[in-house]
Image 1 (cartoon, helix red, strand yellow):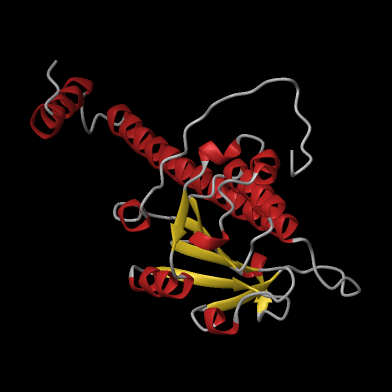
Image 2 (cartoon, one colour; image 1 turned 180 degrees about the horizontal axis):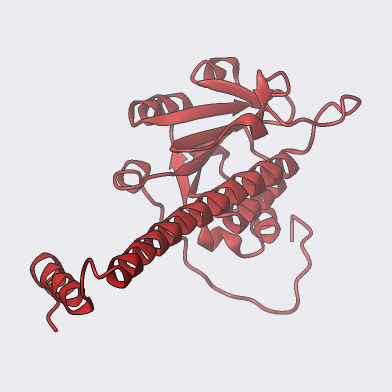
Length: 231
C-alpha cells in the first residue's frame, strides 16, 4: 500500500463509524473529561493518542474536521482497534467549540511547556477540557486565549518536550487514577456511614432504648411508604 503497512493476508470490509454530536453528548454528563487537539494532524500521533484515551477512560476527543485523517490506515493501525471505544467529535472550529464548552461550565486547560503550574497540582474535578497543540508550534496563540489555565508536565529540564502521544498518556493515566481514587473514597465514606448507623442501632437495642421488633417495624414502614417495598 501507499502507507507501506504490513498485513496478514486478510481483507475486511467495514462501515464508517457513527459521528457523535458534542452538544448532545454533554447534556446529561457530569465529571466529564474531554481532549481537544489543536493543530495535531500526524496520523500516528492521533492514533496513539486515541489508544491512550480509550485505555484511561477519557470521555471524548475533539478535533478539527479537516485535521482528522479518517481514511488513514496509519491512524487505525496506531489506534489498534481502540477507535471504536472512544467518542471522536469532529468540529469545524476549535475556538468556538471551546467558547461554547466554557459556557457549559467546562474548565479549559492548555498544555504548554511554559505553563504556570504542574498538571499534577490540579484536582481535576468537574468538567474539564485538555487542549494539546501540535508538536512543532504547540497551541495556536488565539486558541490559548480560551484556556482558563496553562499547565505543564514536569520533565527533565535538559529535555525540551515529549512526543504528544506520550504526554497525553501520562496525563490521561494521572486523571484516571484520581477518578478511581475519588470513587473508592466515596464508597469508603458510605461504608463508614452505615457502619456507624449499625453500631448506634446495636447500642440502642442493648440499652433497651428500642426493641428489635420496634426497629423492624420502623424499617418496614419506611420501606413501604418511601420506596414501595412490602414485607
